[in-house]
Image (cartoon, rainbow, N blue to C red; front, side, top):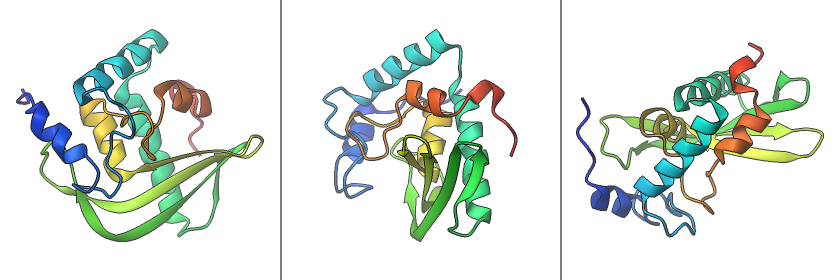
Amino acid sequence: MKQAPDWSVVQERMRPGRLTRDGMLGNDARPPAEIIDADAAALARAGVTCREIAERLHRITELARKALGNPVEIAPALEAWMEEGMGRMSCPFGDPGRWPKAVTYLRHRPTGRLLQWSDLGIHMIEEHGFFEGKGSAFRIQPEEIMGQIDVKHADES
């Protein structure tokens, strides 16, 4: 069983300038545990798990990574691409390991709506149920990702 995180340490690591320039909480005043609880409730209402979302994000990320920066069609209305940076990032929850500094973009072509996430973001969704705080550049509303990607019935491109 995982040890419960020290929330004060986790929250401090999520602040701007600690692990990332802009931080992971955005303008959300709630503590990380409350953000996680609210997102978990939204997922439960939709009957979707963090693991299902993370698995789909992993698949899209790998397709985009293989395209070497070029857009790749994920579904008839969706395209994805990845931009990789130098270095690696640590998890604010204190998990061992470091994740590549890479951003995957997913665009819904008809609307132009763009979602973005990092490899660390996928890890935080999968392992901690953390989608980042509201106002964060990498925040993905669980309802929004479920609307963009039919997580339970996603086509295996």
